[in-house]
Image (cartoon, rainbow, N blue to C red):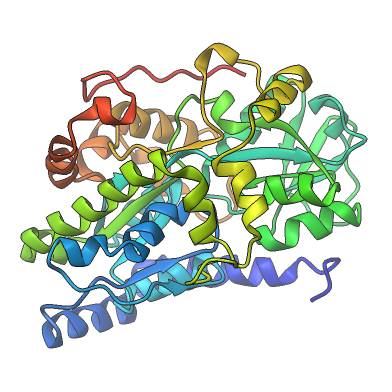
Length: 399
């Protein structure tokens, strides 16, 4: 695939846009209903992308946590794009996925997909990586950067970061002339980002791990800023499940969430081992990434943090955040703030539905937290995840 040709990503986005309409989703949802009727006791079928966002789902499978709960689980299905994830989920080929949190807003309210967020999959775990010659965000003016998707926390955060540095995010063809204060946003698959940066086709990218760590490992880029240092403990990917399972199979759904929450607890206590099992060196070869690259994300050396504090990749050292961390509770305040920010974010395609959304109403409707509350209580409460014993929090956002 030629990285000078960005049309494949546009085709992928257009395919997804077509699926996430009432008409486009209907045949897939009909297939979902048929599958549910034919197989009412379907096992756990996970769909995932090979990024660290999928960690709890893959750990739960690897460690037999679904079986320990008394339910069956098939081998997770590795998918190559968000369009593939959505298509497999809507048609019922998979029934548990990790999905970009803003994408769940689009799916439920832009196209009426009958599914809900049941837990967060992880917090943080993303960064803005730039070419070695870039030392300041302002230097991105007049250049292009890549995002993984329009409906992503990456797009929300980077646009605010650009605006706060006097730059204007725009959406133009890859070879378009840009003003000195404009930064062109291009959608690229994560795996294409490091080669595009190395070839100077883009000046930077913002994406989930381990693709920031990969650029460091290949010495083609440096982390300019971690997203978790801008929006503290933000969700990136969340666990998305079908409403028919949540309503018709509540005991099964509870056990699914139990396993995912226990996987998060295990991962927090076994970060280096988690890197190994996710890697291409692991027995299940869940991802194509080297163990050393994943370790840089999940269990970095203390010296790494010192370097990021010195470079400014971490500004809020007092927050004392991990590069990626795991806690499952979907705080309502985050959903409220996310919807507010999406309304003011440049997004390609039809986003008219966003204007009518009430952030508070979305926070109550998009998320079903009854299962995750039970799962958290069973592992010792929120303190198990280093959090205060409260299901409320104030969002901290500081560029």
